[in-house]
Amino acid sequence: MAVNTGAIPRELVASELFGHLKGAFTGAIADKKGKFEEANRGTLFLDEIGTMSHDVQVSLLRVLETQVIERVGSNRSIKVNIRVIAATNDNLEKLMEENRFRDDLFYRLNVFTIDLPPLRERHGDILYLCNFYREAFNLELGKKIESITPRAMEVLEKYQWPGNVRELRNVILRGVLTATNQIDLKHLPTNVIKPGLAQVNITFRPGVPLSEVEKTMIIQTLKAVRGNKLKAASILGISRRSLYNKLEEYQISETEV
Image 1: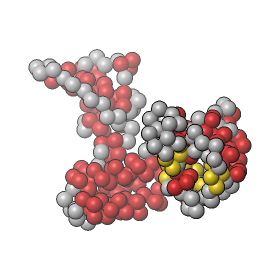
Image 2: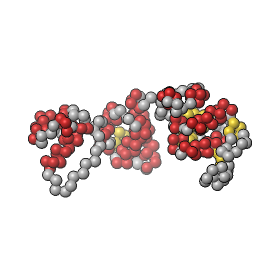
Image 3: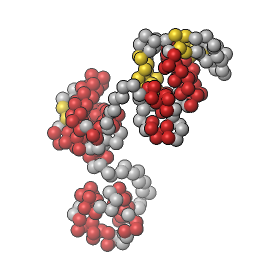
Image 4: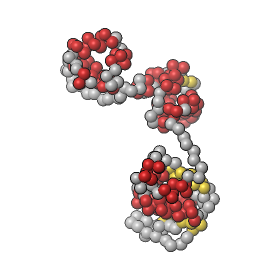
């Protein structure tokens, strides 16, 4: 059984985990088993463990130590036998320093730790994951994307993946949806092909002079690359000298970028 505690309203986490009796609170229209009961003699996966309220942390600690639960609104003890796996993106040591996560619960959970580094630190996994998701989406969507071109794969392997595996999954889904035979550069998002270039929506009113459009695009590109003129010129498809000429022509100062 899997529970994303971060997706459940804090006041309902205890009910979701331990169950409740009819009438225990507003909206409790029937008795309900919690995830601990449903996962009895199995495994319970608690995701986003760092988001739990202090009261639920106390209850969870008690359950882990006694292997006994009580439904919300009940005083009857129910014995459970469960393996618990907990995951978090939070720095629990920091949360403990801020008194937002109980240290006794941390040490009770911290029996066997699996530290999963971000994708940017394990580039060797990228090729495998890209092909895994390509094949998975082929089956799901009835597509026949045979491969990812070497130049697209090179870009994917160099990208830093701030969104980790979820971001990679969505990029490959986009590629499978838009490609017909192979996923190539044109099927990848701009921010992956040109990392550091922020995606900014700019709207121009009809009739605005082309010079104003060009000036705006130059300023926004320079802002996106933090003033790196060589990189901005490359993105804009012009030489660095041409970019300097445009800066002078449009009187774009350093303060504007």
